[in-house]
Amino acid sequence: MQPCGRRGGAFLVSSEQRNGAIAFISITSEVGGPLTIASPWGKQAVRLAGRGGELRPDSGLIVLQTVRGGRYELTPAERNP
Image (tube, rainbow, N blue to C red; front, side):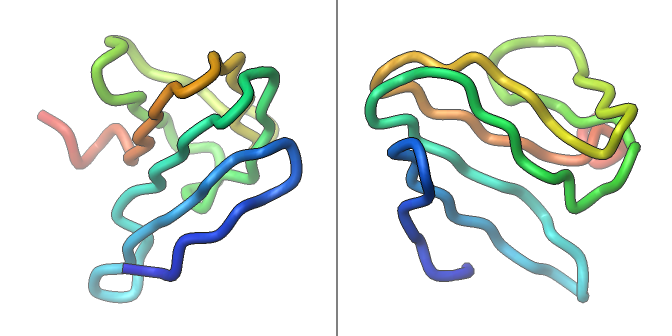
């Protein structure tokens, strides 16, 4: 597990690397609002746990509208059946 850290906009971000690849990104929004994060999986589809469907970061950026206290877990879509 990578160290957790607060990032601009009051987001707490952590991730885990397995076999040289990022396995997931976990984000907690402390105040809510827009979040843009560079996808470590490039333009590959990303699954947002518990929300259904896939995000398609065409530009390599993941963009979410978050709510205060919201938790968001991102994983590459191909790793989720």
